[in-house]
Length: 156
Image (cartoon, rainbow, N blue to C red; front, side):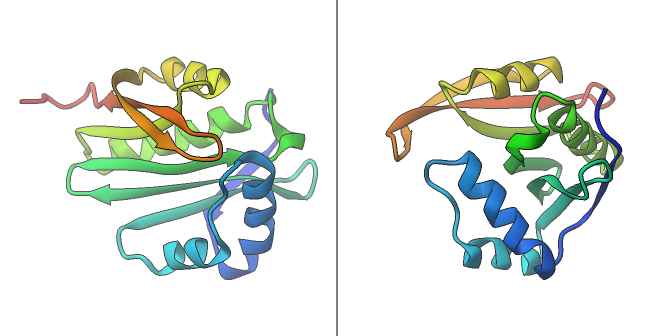
């Protein structure tokens, strides 16, 4: 059962905690400047998940809305909160956002070796639609491209 989470828009005050999670989870982390830019980017939606149970950020989510499509740019869960349903809560929030905005589809990339993330995406009906060779660095690795289709809308 996931801990009690509150998902809210990120603020500048959240950036140190976001950066700590980012460094903990990614071998090639984004810079603080990159995250700060996402806070002011008109198309970016930047959310954090606060855990009431441990009184800290459990994770964060960044996506862009581009017309009738959402692109998931980042999703990360603090190590202390993993395997407790926090990732599912954030991904569910993302899917609900797509549906509420009548988006036709959502796209994301994931490291080909990231089996836990791939299982999570597949649980939410994302399907692998492609591979981007040598997309990631540190270490160099392929990205798998996943797509979610809104089953409430007809796709032409």
